[in-house]
Amino acid sequence: MADTAEALRERVLALFAKRVATDPEIAALLERIHGDNGTGYADADAFALRIGQALADAYKAVQGELPEHIDAAFADTLLREALQGDYEQVADVAAAVQKALNSQAGLGLNAVRAQLNTDRIDGLVGRLAGAEKTQDALWLLDEPVRNFSMSVVDDTLKANIEFQGKAGLRPRVIRTMHGKGCKWCQDLAGVYDYPDVPKDVYRRHERCRCVVTYDPGRGKRVQDVWSKRWTNAEERDKIEARKQVGKDSFLTHLAENPTALGRYTPQSLKETLERMGYAVKPLSSGRLKGVPFEDGGGYKVNFTDSGLLMYHPERLSHHNGEYYKISTGKRGLHHYEINGQEFNPRDRHKIR
Figure 1: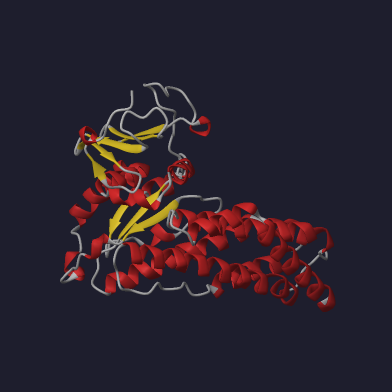
Figure 2: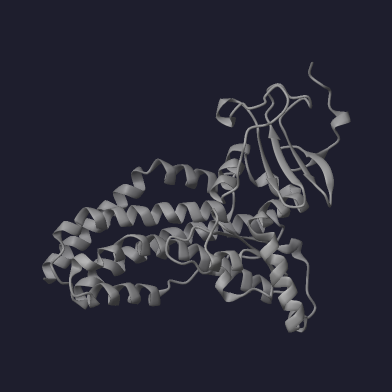
């Protein structure tokens, strides 16, 4: 059985490498992440999901060759090296994303690379070996593999949040639901300032596609973060407020920090919003009314506080070029260049 395990391990590794090398989405994500238009941890999540999918596909291709029962040694041979390879690729990309975010925020800090979570690998090995029949445990080679891959990004975020917090910064964690989300995800969605970050905010259950991102807090220093613990009543109030923020925390964050728009292209921002579960719609007025973005139109998204984010392309623009418009009840209406810099519409010549 040892020879069979070694042969299948080699096949899985070869199939995994081939799928990663030929996946156009992985190539596009790597280009964006290492270029100037990356979307931060949203890109890292998407990359991890594709890497995990590539490994799950490799296991699916060989599942018909697996023995009726797998012992611990066989399971370890089949899983450990491949999962470590998954980890290496995702950890490198997540660290590159963090390094770029640190640079954009003007932080002279290195990115912390997540450590390999060997407990997760041990757990998968034990569960696969513990099944009476391999057929009953094939599901372990599918979604749990993708989940493992995405957990590397979550571990990277957690490590860097804690590192920056201990360095005297006050980073902010933003967890946004994907779609409607389950009750557990709904309770965790929101914005958290270090050190008041619940440990579960970095975790995800199977098939969870929630997006966890962060804001470095503009380098603000905290004299004594541990003296800022909440009382029970205050904590309850903040948790309730976070539930109200829910998935709209991302757009609220953009409205309050518009320079973050510069991290996106209009297309990558639209894709990020859709990935997070926002309803991205064509413009509802003007000469591009109802025209899909893919056909040269703009788009808009509504959110809390009477919020509206709108993108208008250069085509048929009344402000001499493409732009964003963000409106909230708290901040009012503002216009922004694609790089996130605010402009006064009166300073632009109208196109007639």
